[in-house]
Length: 522
Image (tube, rainbow, N blue to C red; front, side, top):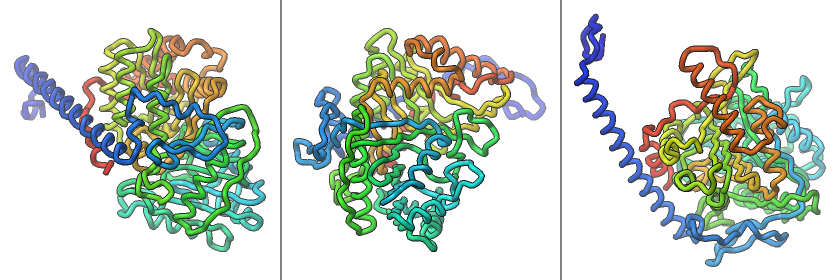
C-alpha cells in the first residue's frame, strides 16, 4: 500500500502533494514551537511564584550575584534574609574527596567502608535490594548479609523511599515492603520506609555514612533493578544493561553535613532522635558544599524547602566562560535550558563549548529532553558550540547500541566547579524529589574528573586529551560522534562507543518538556 492508500501502486506522490506535506509539517512545527514556548513561560512563572512564596526567589534571579557558595566556614548553615533557615549549607574546607567513576569502583569502596564500620552505618536510597552484591567477587556477601553482620556490633539504619501510591512503575510499594523485610529479618538492621513525598515524586538521594568519618554521595543505587550498577568503564556488552554512573567518597568536615541531613530525615520518618554529628577533623585540602532539594511542606526541618541544587547549577552555568560539561539522565529543566541557550546565543568567548552526555533511551522523558535540546540547537544556530552525545557498549569493535545507560549526574564548569550527586536536570530533581549533591571548589579535582570521564568516553589515554577543551571537542568528540552516526545511518559497522545523541533536531517536539513540567510540578 503506497502513501495514497492504493494497494500495489508504486506511483510516487506528486510534487504538489509533497509541497503540501512540507507546508503542513512546517506549520505543525511552528505551532509546536509556539505552544512549547508558551508553556515554558507558564512553567517559569509558576516556579517563580512558588519560590518567591517560599523565600527562595533569588535562586531564579540572574542578576543576583550574592555568592553564597563563597563562604567557607565550619559554623552551622546560614539563613536567608527572610529567615528561611538552612538556605545554604556552608562551604566546608579541609576535605579529602575521591570521585568514583562507574559502579565497579564505587561499590567496592562502599563495601569496604561498610565492612569496616565500628559504630554505625546509615544508608538513604531510592531503593535497595537485599540480595544485591556490591562486588563481583565470588565470595561477596549479599547486601542484607553484609549489613546483618555489621549490625551485630554497630547500628545499621536504612532509609528507603516507600514507593509510589499506585503500582504504575517500579519499585512498587509491595517490592519496597518486601525488600525492607528482607533486610530486617533475623538481623539487627533497622529499615524505615519514607512516604513523605510530594504526589508523583520520590526520595531519590543515594547516601552512605559510616561512623561519621566518611560518606558516599552520588547517583548509584544499591540494587540490580533495571541495570548493572556494578559496571566498569569498559562497558562490555555481556551485561543485561550497562550502566555509567558516578559517586564521591568524602572525608573531613563535609561528612557532618551529610550525616545531619540523614539524621533530619530519620527523625521524622522513624521517630528516633540521633545524636548531632561531630565535625570530623580536616582530612585534605578541598572545599566542598552540600546542596539539596527538599520540597516545601515535606519535612518540619525544612518547611519552606531547600532548593540549593538548583541554586548551585544556575549560578555556575551563568558564570561559565569556556566550558559546560554535563552528564545527566535527563535535561528538561526550563531554567537550566534557558541559561544554556542564552550562553549559546551570547558566548563569553569564541572557544565557549557546551558538551552533553545523555542516555540514548532514558527510561522516561526522552521526548522531553529532545524538545529542550531542540531549543539549544536553535540557540547554537549552526556555530558548533553545542554537542549532544551518548555512548553504547563496545566489544571487539562490535557496538551493541543502547546497552549502556547514562545515569551519572555530573556537572563541570570551566574546570573550576564540579558537582556530583543524585539530582537530574528536570523538575523532579530540582523542585520536587529529595536529592543530595556535593559541590567541589577544587580546579585540580574538577579537571582530573573531566579527563577521566573523557578518557572513558573517547577511549583515549588522558595525556592525549589533556589539551584545551574546545580543541578536544572540535577535533575528537565531534568527528568521532559524527563518523559513528554516519556509519549507523549507512548500515556500516560501528567502530567506537561514542555517537551523536539520536533523534535530536531543531524541530524536535517542543511541547513535551514544558507540558511535563506543568504536570509533575504541583
